[in-house]
Image (cartoon, rainbow, N blue to C red; front, side, top):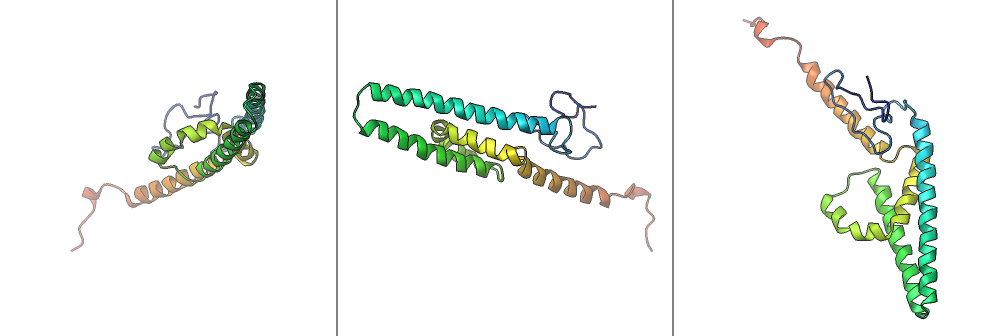
Length: 167
């Protein structure tokens, strides 16, 4: 009935709205089944490990700048640039877990988010400690779609052609 890899149903059931799969979680976030907790733990550990590895790479880059003897201004500028971009990327990523981003703004910030990738990884880590990143947004949208579907289907109570006219 479901794909064992991500918990996504093989075929639609009931004809109602289907939940949107999340990266690394599929649709396991709906009922918190099929290894949801293990996936959250893996997402937390993985994003933290990636952030630590990224910081080590940035440290090597910083040492390279110092070895080039460029003075004190360039290393300071690089540290400030990564700190500011990481904090902006953290905030942008965190907001993305609760509301949809404007695609035009998202493409305009692509460079900033690439530079501040450590902030995005840390936001993913912190959010995965609480829930699957993006689960709250997707759950609200899915529950709204379910309610709308119930309202639409509850009005249809049979074939209208077979109804008797009231005289």
